[in-house]
Image: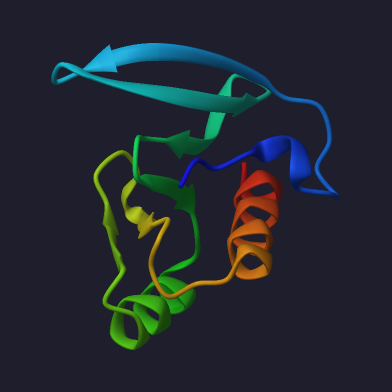
Length: 98
């Protein structure tokens, strides 16, 4: 599954850049030069607050602490347990937190 940010409504302007990290390609999406979304091959990483992060990690096996944002975000397996609408909500929240 590939995440398509163009289908997420309710976010403003952003830029993106693609980079190679640990021999894997990832795309960073930035708002005012601050990353709010990392799209990897099978996962996305978003900023979140501590309480939501704790809830998501406890509730879903497909959600873990973000490798990019660390304690400030989560990494979500795209073919996991969250619906497209829930993923879109997380991206909007991350955008607003940036």
